[in-house]
Image: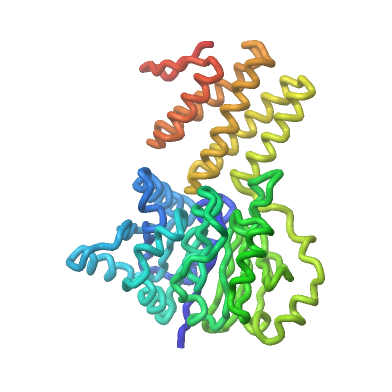
Length: 399
């Protein structure tokens, strides 16, 4: 009997918000090896940096050493492939996270990976798939990059189809379910929005429903007890044909809730609109900081603008270990915009606290070898008319 723990994380897999769930999940593994599959982000030029940050995050926040199994593209038959498979098969904790679900599927489908996941769960291991990786587990997968960023028609891509055989639940998994990054446009449901999800729902088999996992939230599917526990900041949603029901973190549900009488379960909560407040993330903190800055700028409140920009700088520091590239880029762009606009509103003296904090953050990024963040901060400072010079005694800046 399959007895492992399958964890589906909506986002925040390397964020401060998920440290407590990670620690609880690691307790389940004991001292067995912990490994991370690097496939979903294997196409990115900064893949090594993402791996390094993730390993450091788990070491610092949970005290666990995680090794990276290289499977950025499908290895050719031979020693390297067998070594990777042996390491995966010996793991007590197997993790994959951010990147592109369709890229991961290209290199996992018709390989040993689906069987490796099933074997891990059969020996009571933990399989933790988050964000992009979580999308691959179902029979149907959202090609999120292609739809949201390229403009492809909203349609499903074939998934690994391991979730239903393992759980018995005919469900499609959707992480980032409560995403709110779009501000004035709908980016819920992993950036699909209501219109596109409604179109895609109609293409699902009649017995299939959606399980949505909010950002910075984990759904822990215990295959021995056949229960799912919700942990983290948000909740879990059951949706079918537009009707939804949501359960908050702290809830434990038997699998039968999803299958025994689906219409009755959905009717028990006529409206799913009164769901939780958005989970904290760098993206949501950026949206809030920008809103505060814009309001202060309209009121010509220079001190308020500086405070909002400092809040944004602090958020970027707090979330520096997070591997969500899109949110980091959004945060950097927002900070650059604030600096440029501040230049039109304030004199040099008022900028001093902000510039000092940004220069210090750049130094911290360079010390941590986060060259991308260091370069982004240098560019942001330059856009605001600030010149930074590195000296043996530390950085010096001038307007």
